[in-house]
Image (tube, rainbow, N blue to C red):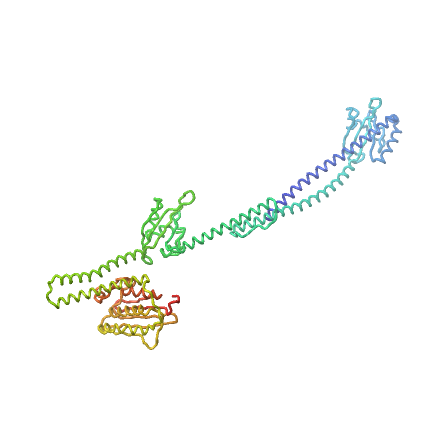
Length: 594
């Protein structure tokens, strides 16, 4: 703004200076002309007056008397008078001796009067006699209608020059003061104009720097006041719009960040413009390594490149499944569509990926569950049907054989009953239809009580069962019956899958907040690929052995759900051929956070 008010001040100063100079020269010219005209009229009046006196007194005939008379005019009026006859001879002069003066007929002022017959003659020239620039005015001396001579009056221009010098000095002083005052006024006006404009410019600069809270604080009226009001209105509007945009961006960012589906935008040049956090997880890369890259470089590993290329070429939506194998296998449902800007101008492709790995896994689990249930039911049903039909046919006469067939039917029916009861229990537990009767339970004592029912199985397999010491109670809040069911299933599995002469060890650890029950065996172990599925319904590592042991394949699934209903968790570690360690972690109180 300094340059603006300086430019305005300089322009104002230049304008005032030009007007002052023009006024100065104009006034000087007018005054000089006025002085000259006044001097001319003064000379003419004096010349005419002397001419009339000469005619009235007929002094033109008496040169000596005229010389004496004219000589007296010089002192009082500082004007020179010269009288010549019609031949140009000087008769009288107020300053010099006429006898010493040349003939004046050829002087321009006399020529104009004597020869041209003008009313008066005028000339300005340097006088060698007076050594000054003089103004000469000649008028005719007319007697009886005949010009008998001429009277000339002259005055030094030095008087005019002195008057003009004084005038010029006065004009210079007055106009100089006017110039200074107007310049100061111009600077003040310029500052008065540019100061609020500077505030407006400062606010606009701050607005351009995204400081939308800035306002113009001024009380100036007129156009600048209206401009300030308009800028303030604009700033308020921008602030409101930016607040809305920021809120919308925050909402969009929050939505994009918390979406479980991956979103990616590819611009019309084929480069990635935007990815959300879910898409980063799918690609196992940070957005900094994805944004700006070519789509074929980013999406080729999971088969997206060809789909994006199809959208660019066909300009239509595409729906397909893609697979990712790093860092883990994923199955994703891909939706691709072109997106447009203003005027339906194509701007790129939007890609949305839904992770359907769990859905596909659940579908497979459901399929496996149906197949397993069918298989589990088919075997006992087939046995019951076959042996019952044989008995009904009457072909079996031997009582021992009949008894054997009936026992098989009884055992298979019991197996069916256990299977159905386990399925019903598991379904109820999953739907939380079995309420927990929470009470204070000594888990160490409960382990010893439960182990009594398994001593026969352990002795039969010559398996050593090592239990935690019961000298110190380990208390927690739990449903006693459900906790017993958990302990029974885990110890029974340890005995069943441990060869003869093995060891099943149960230990307890506790801290201020939770209790850990650890069931470890040195049995056959579990393959690494089966660890993730060991808690699925009907999943068996050794199916033949599990069925021979009378298990339904639902025990660990029930255990997992019972532990989760107690707000606990279960962990498993196993090495094939070396043994398995299962850790159950339960909170001491059911009202504490996990």
